[in-house]
Length: 247
Image (cartoon, rainbow, N blue to C red; front, side, top):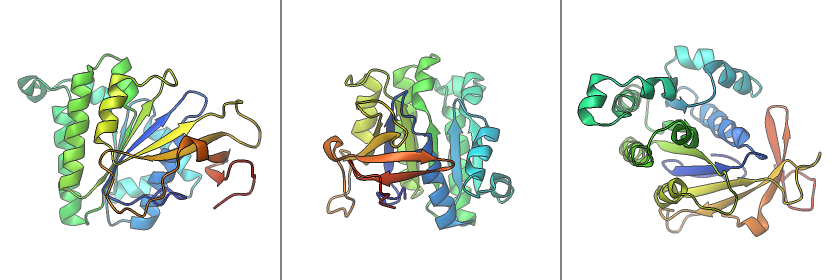
């Protein structure tokens, strides 16, 4: 998953980005690679806060992915997490958790997918920072993330969560808690010199506290980060100081 890093399945991948270097391309590439590798054998669930289904359809169409077909086959599920969480059900109120109904819906999708299709689902939360900005408490968000991670482990699914870094160099409480749960941390940053025509940003990969021992995954510190250039619908990766794509 997510070439050129070739990450394993069943992980919790934390993706962080900054305003000058949004991680949209990384989320889309993870989703596209999962769809093309798994075909119709495993479900994908996108929990979106800011982007509409139409926007996702438009972006993935550039990679020749027809989301309408995926939805019809019940291998792609789009959930507007903001609308759902803001309209609390009686069950949510009983449990004192604004995300209880959301959790139950995701659980049902994964259980049905494992029964009717196969394990190996993908759950994407894009993005948790916006949920915090619109007023959800850090404790509720952490409870949601822990529940999603446990649910994905139970169903042999991969979890991806995007978190925006507002002030570079400052680790906010939400990031610290998310990092303590993650398997790997994909760190997407702008160039120190700013964006250029040839380079859109740089990307590092760090092991999280729950990384697999003896893993074949090759991590990259910021000092050895890959650079990338965005094109229409994809990204080209290359070593620092070289414009030749490594893939």
